[in-house]
Length: 274
Image 1: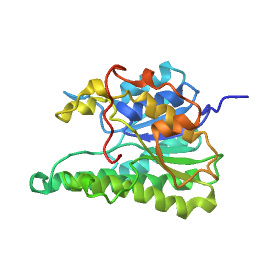
Image 2: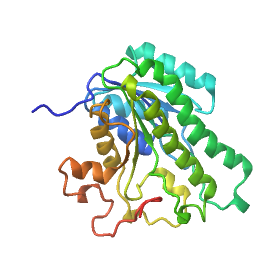
Image 3: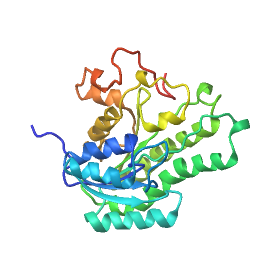
Image 4: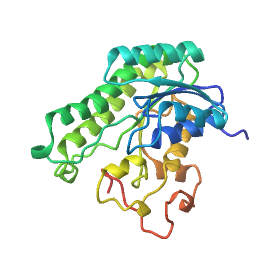
């Protein structure tokens, strides 16, 4: 039986210059996919490695085709231009991955309004904007998918007590995905969410104090789960909130030690999960 593949498929991935977004891009690239690397970083950040150009080089080194696009997804004009450039370069868009996200885990009294606005604009508005502008290109494609990195929605107060602003922005991403799944089900476009069961070690963790990175997993587990979702039949698999480990277990994976930063350590469960 032939393994599911993304060969020849064209992906528009936000926040793809590093971390989970880059891992998803590289997993698709190994199949021979086309990747639009959509992110703001064009010159090295002092604390966060990776630019759209270094990501593009890695994608092409493993067998994919890359299109680096400098985009702030808060800008209607920049996103519209990037979507058009991706469709023109690759002959269309098959998959959108809403991975870009802003985070600040603070209570209201120390959350600046500009940071509140940033999280809502990148996380919620950015997800909606990219979905809206990619939809005309997705409709009518063979097995079109939109995958958003957002957690299952929960009204448990524990997820609000320390960082209401961030929680609202991430749940908004999930609500948008769920709603768009309903809106576009009859058109055959799948909208699903994916969230890691454990905290994932990325460069961004360096900006969050108190996280023991030895108790994390590497982003490849999210990339492998994303690949499995994106190769499923869009018409029958939509409107789901998926957890990376559950997706892999359903596919028959039983040994997850290879994803751990340190297999000897007890893993830290990610936010929003029991």
